[in-house]
Length: 270
Image (cartoon, rainbow, N blue to C red):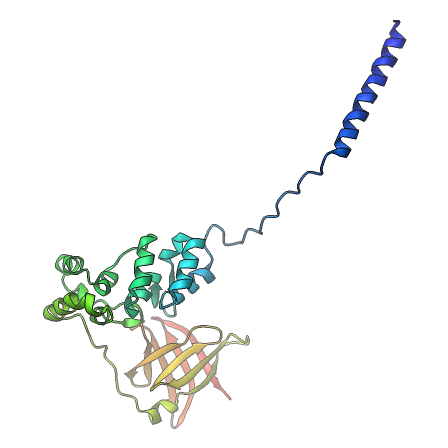
């Protein structure tokens, strides 16, 4: 076979091989498409604030949803949320102050960090004693929303009765926050809408509900207010914050928020 014939033969063979491969490829099933992955959120690797807020919220009483969220992300057992003005609450803290043993135990089983508040509600007397003996006066530290340690013991029911008795004997576990009486008639002068900017969210509503004033920024959680006197209030769970109303005669044209310096001033509208 001369050189030309040999080259031609090899070329034809190569084409034939390529054709056979192409034929086999045509008969073969199409490859599966790559799975479409969800877009990675901008906050990754931080977990979703919406899920954290939901976990804390449902930990007050929705055991089924708590367990669903724990299956999705077990680390949500340590979810924490600021309801406003630094009133931080954990999922376990929520279950503890309402006395929900089922939810508290589910959270602890998933790695939630135990505290004196959870131990009190669950009736873990040795743990509570150890806290108090190691840090005298700690029994007076308020929990979420300013709820006292003794209230956690009461909400723990019969199983927490030994802790309730112990805290009662020690004293100081049920401090009463300093507050000035406010009549419904006196409260009405503050009720209204206050604006501090041009956006829809730049509005504060002061309402009177269930015997007390509430502070709500549009789209945010309502905060109950404690009257401190002289037209000043503090949100529940944030005793160092002050919401001061300017009073001129019978009119209340403005409020200001101090935390501790001035955060905003809002003018009454409508």
